[in-house]
Length: 271
Ligand SMILES: NC(=O)c1ccc[n+]([C@@H]2O[C@H](COP(=O)([O-])OP(=O)(O)OC[C@H]3O[C@@H](n4cnc5c(N)ncnc54)[C@H](OP(=O)(O)O)[C@@H]3O)[C@@H](O)[C@H]2O)c1
Image 1 (cartoon, rainbow, N blue to C red):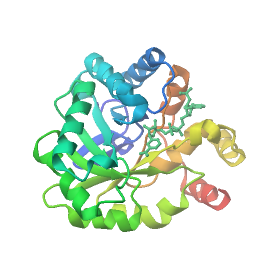
Image 2: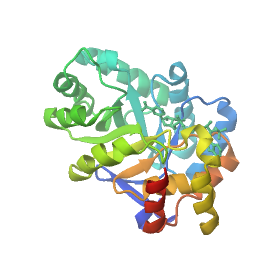
Image 3: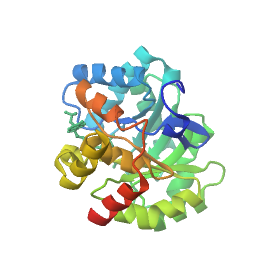
């Protein structure tokens, strides 16, 4: 895995290393086209794949199962996410996880996330219940998604044996302030990785004027600048989604170089 890029292009999740840019599986239109695009990405070093039981009624997890069959279990760091209404009961949690694992065709995932907080159960209780997945070996790591700073603090304080290693949140050049000012400093202090979702703002960063002007300086595209900006931040990996090989190629071009800090500051001033 490590032969593709510079060591600095890999980030820690727990004590694992993943390529700083992975791929998400939400709202895939053609699984057959997506299969070719994802296999292309995996053969070019992408190892982090993000999915969820919620996506397309489980079909996205089945799609990741096809990838596992083709690429091999060890080629992938699989993240999936559980719906919050399961979290009041450990048996429900285990049953839902087993259903995800069946769809994925694996005996464990690398990372199981709480998709968003269950508002009816205390953070402490839901996180302690969720730890059952790591205790049973159904996942190697646990984490959360869409937790604000107060919720994340409570989650980290609640764990008994297994650390929260990830908070997966909306983070892009156009939606950056809360993450950069509130979440990220705390995450860096506490060895939590931010998985940045919707990092391309559904593709709309491609036409952003500020990014276009920076991109031309590097011979890169706005998409590549948008992703490079994110992964230039400590403890951040990005999980864009694409089911097109040419888009995946463009996404991969966000790795292997770094924006100069003056350009990062320029983006922060302008966006
Ligand atoms: N935890 C959560 O609550 C949560 C919420 C949202 C998303 N997520 C995760 O994060 C992943 C990514 O987020 P997202 O899907 O919302 O948004 P995104 O990655 O910002 O955008 C995806 C869109 O951008 C397009 N795109 C990809 N590469 C492109 C390129 N090079 N040029 C132009 N357009 C391009 C894709 O179209 P093509 O497929 O046609 O390339 C797709 O329509 C999801 O798939 C999911 O795994 C998690």
